[in-house]
Length: 64
Image 1 (tube, rainbow, N blue to C red):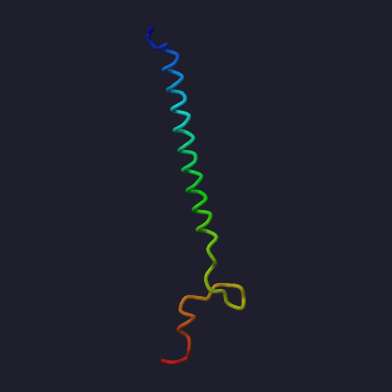
Image 2 (image 1 turned 135 degrees about the vertical axis):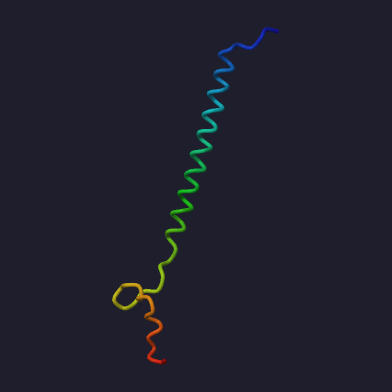
């Protein structure tokens, strides 16, 4: 049997690099999707005027 063609080794290296690049891209997309999903969590409490309550607003019950 003859030895392997050097072009075969180059092709194999290119294919491996392409596979690794695709895997990194897949991981990056999965992380971005997870961040988007986390950003879609329901917002906190909303007051009548459409704004979130002011800090300490819950403490203003009048009792001291």
